[in-house]
Amino acid sequence: MKKIQFMFPVLLVVLAAVFSSCKNDSFKIDGYLAALDGVAVRVVFDGDSGIVDELATLDKKGHFSFKGQSAHPTLVSLLNQNGNQLITLVAVNGDHLKVKGDASKAMGIKAKGSKINEGWQLFRDEHSAFYTDPNPSRLDAAIEKYVHEHPSDMLSTVLLMADYSDYSNNEKVGKLLQSIQIEARPESLTKAFLGNPMGHKNASIPRLMTLTLVKHGGDFEEVKMTDCMTLISLWANPQEGRNALIQKLQSQEEAPTFRILDILTEADTLRWHNTIAGDPKSWLHYWAPGGPLEQGIQLLGITTMPWFAVTDNTGMVTYSGPSVDEALRAVGATR
Image (cartoon, rainbow, N blue to C red; front, side, top):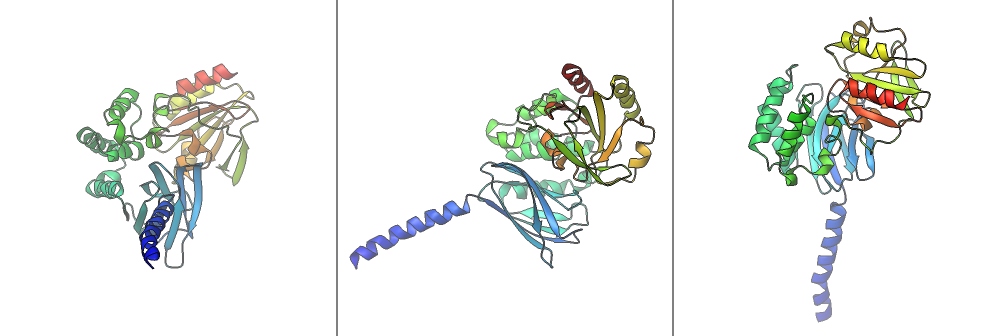
C-alpha cells in the first residue's frame, strides 16, 4: 500500500508532462464567423514543414477549429475561399487562439487568446479608422510611432511585418527593423522580409514550376514557368506610373525568349479591365484570387506593391523584389 502511495504522485507528474508535451506540439485556433462567404476558412502560414495552405470547414452555425504546428512565432492568415483577408494572427505551439465576428464587415473580426494577439487587437481597435482609410500613410505613421516607443515588444515586429505598407524606402524600413531589440524580432517573423525589401533574391525560394491563375476573359489556367524566361509584374489598384512602367518593360521585351506575366493581386477586379485596356497586346494578363498569399506567389515574400520577380526557363527565381530596374537587370543576366 505504501508503495502505491509513493508511486501515485510520480505517475501524476509523468502524466502531466505527457499532456503538457502534447499540448505544446501544436497551436489551435477556434472561431465563429458570421456572414462568411463560403463553407470554409482558408488558413495560410509558414510552419515547421514549410508553407501551409489548408481549409478549415465551418459547421452550419459558422464555427470552425484548426490545429497547426510552428515551434516559433509565425503569422497566420485567415482568408475566405476567394482569397480575401479576414484577419491575421500570431501563433506558436501551445497557443489556443479564438476569433469571433462578422466576416462581412471591415474590422468586424476580433482575436484573443495570447498577450501579443490581444495587444494587436487593441492596436487595431484604437486605429480602426486608419485601417479602413484607402491612404495607408496614417497607419504607417502610427506603426512607426509604436515601433519607436516599444523597441522591446514583439508587437512592433508584427505590425511592421503584417500591417506596414511603405517599403519603398529601403533604408527607412531597415532602420525601423534594426531599432527593435533582437529578442523582439524573431527570425521566424522577419526571414521573408529582411532580404526582399532590399531587393535581394531569397535563397530559400523553391523553383516555380507552375502558377494557377485566372486568365483575363477566361477561367483558371495553369501557367508553366518552364516554357521560357519570365518577368512577373504583380500589382494592385491604383498603380501609379503604370504607363511609364509599361514603356520601360516594353522597351526591354524580346519575345519569345522573354515574356511578361501581368498579375492583379487584389480581390476587387472591377477596375481590372479598364486598367489593362492600353497594355501591349503581347502581355499575358492574369488575376491571383488569393492576392500575395496565392499558392506559388506567396513564396516570393511580397511586402509591397508593385512587386517583380524573374524566373529562368527552369523555374528558378533569379530575382524577387520591388525594383523593376533590378528585375530587368536579372533578365539581362539570365539571357
